[in-house]
Length: 179
Image (cartoon, rainbow, N blue to C red; front, side):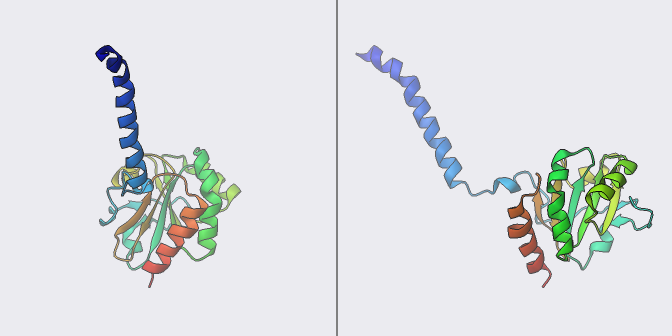
């Protein structure tokens, strides 16, 4: 009879592990969208990037002081960036100050991409070697941050935006922080 229990032991262990896993999934205190966002609650890194456009307006964190901004890291070669792009256009049309960082992308390709899809960005800086991305903790594109008037990172989404992200999280947060 004791040998029968040995056969049941692996199954019992699997059931116990599945129980712990299920509990962690349903009772976790962390938002999966915020995982790996170490800058949330901290001052945004200082950047000063050359402009993508010929208008000469650089993308610098110093220009954001006193304003709530959404900073979006994108690239023309990034398929998810194209998917989220209409959401950024709509946020911009609704008065959200959207800043763009052209991440590890050829400027001419980014200009053509924005000309084709529309340009939601107030300013666009060029980050050809990814140094600004490293400063902001970017692991890939697209990634989007909300930065408050004092320069504090309030939200960092490390994935393509969804409509819920744009209009149930970002837009209300920007409105609240702008008061």
